[in-house]
Amino acid sequence: MMTAEGEEDLGGVAMETPVPRGEASGEQEEVPSFPSYKKSVDENHSESEPQQGNNHSGSEPDPDKNQTGTEPDQDPTGSGKLSTGPVVVTGNQKTAAIEKLERVRKWSITTYKCTKQVLSEKMGRGSRTVDPELEARVDILRDDRRRYDHVTRLAQTLATQLTELNQTQRTLGDVFADLSLKTPPLHMEFGLNSDTQRFLSKSGETLVWAINSFTSDMNTLLNKTIEDTMINVKHYETARVEYDAYRCDLEDLNLGPRDTATLPKLEQAQRTFQNHREKYERSRDDLSVKLKLLEENKVKVLHQQLMLFHDAVVSYNTTNHRHIELSLQQASTKLTMPGTESPSWLEESGSPS
Image (cartoon, rainbow, N blue to C red; front, side):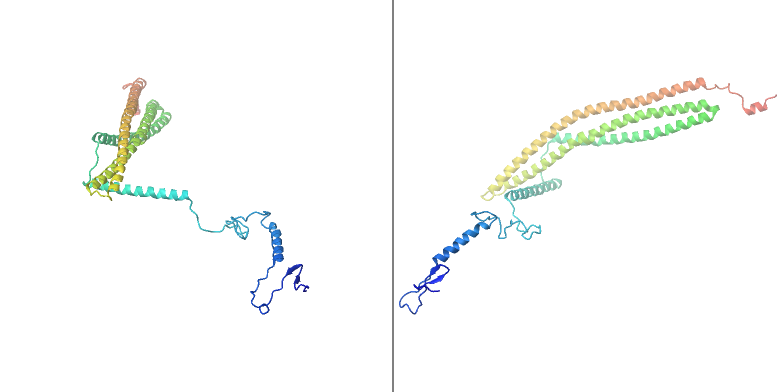
């Protein structure tokens, strides 16, 4: 519907009628403007915005949410499965991985140098640091350990054999006692043997208990006290090999040319050598103190256990000897003396009536 002024009525919005190109001579074409229509559209759009965004009126969109309104690590389909994506490594994880790789690298270098040093020493090409006094004490400890282990094994064998002997004597005493009841003419003889065998079996059990106590304390000395010192010996030998390996490495660098490229390596080798030297000296001092304490403890333990072992053996043999002597005296008084026995059946049958 056209108005009188040549404007078209569009729902209350006034719009100017554009002028055709041909009718306006020498004039540029004007772009139509829609001020009223644009304003109404903007108002309608602003009124519809508060209804979206989960009641967050006037707030900015959440950057942590995607276009579907779900969290980035959630499945928009609601299947419950997390969406896969690139794995992000944090700074702490990177630092731990780098430290682990650095430890592996240092361990590999040290292992290579120590293996090379050991092979050189065995082939007679490399030099080694020697502490004559300390190494002599270590050799004595190794020899003592071997001898103590041999004594302990022999004592265990003796205890096993005595246990079997005691069991046999106990069984033999039971058999003698049964025969004593079933054979009245030999009741006294079987009874004496039964008492002797049972007494020896009981006395042997006491000796076995003393020997087992001795072997138990010897095993403690070998497997705990001496073994703990041998661990220190291994640490000392490892520190000594590392010290010699880095010492030889430093000597080789000192014999080579010195320029700007080798000076940093020489300084680093000097620092590493100094660290291993301090470690070697600490290990040597610790081992020396441990050997001294072990020697004192070993003397006390062995003195006590050896005396107990000796007393048990002496008591076993002395007690058995006394019991046998007493049994012989009782037998001589209770048994019939020779010449007083009753005549045999042949003598009785051959004599005149």
